[in-house]
Image (cartoon, rainbow, N blue to C red; front, side):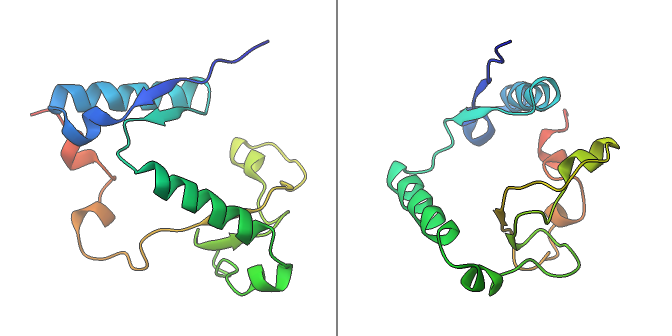
Length: 131
């Protein structure tokens, strides 16, 4: 069985009217629901920044464990910092008891939650709600 990964153009989220943004959001929702993955285009991120970011990630993940432990995610399991192998078990979110995941991950986000509505309501909701 072959699964086709959807390709979604994000340009409407940056430049489109409400109808275009809602259509793009519907594509994202369908991809997350149907396949769980998607590839994006039209994100507006310069290619050289993507290349440098990928190189930094490769360097970080090839680093010794003691260096990565210096940025270990907080004990509250807030999704910030390095998640070592076996730190997460994503299948448990589906109610399936499985061994821990063998992958390691890096997560980041705003250092503080801030006071903007973005942090207190569902992200995107005020922007995407039809008038």
